Length: 167
Image 1 (cartoon, one colour):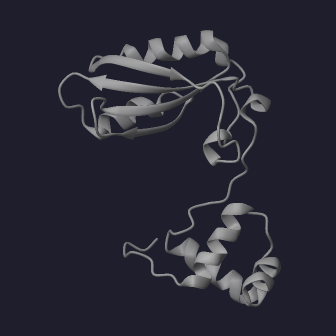
Image 2 (spheres, helix red, strand yellow):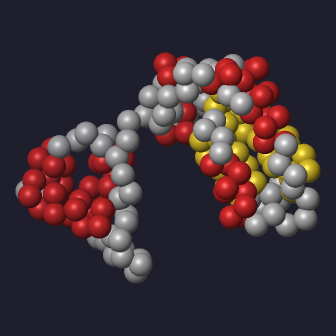
């Protein structure tokens, strides 16, 4: 991958838009829509992948179909200044955490958590709170998705078979 920012033009943007809408769209279909040959689209997609603009292709699935029936966002408040690297180590140990980021405002981090049920979510929350530098958490349970077609509404991996018995 290149360390320089990738340069791309309007055709690249149209290709990216088509792939984001449906990553299974063929190069021929994209080419027909934007006025390029399938070969030219493939070359551009290959370049966009090599430069790190396109980082992968994935299927978005209904979370409940994969065993994730409970979803929440958790604000994490740390004692002192917990370095992002340390927070990243912690969240990697919890497969239920599907996204994590440091944030501005009162909280130090925001976690997106998926669980099989409320009991499983509570168990995950208890594990997160055992970290010595975590002072408190505030949780927000997701009731419904207002934009159900958004990637955040779907799941990218299945719940573990033993999710209810983790640790």
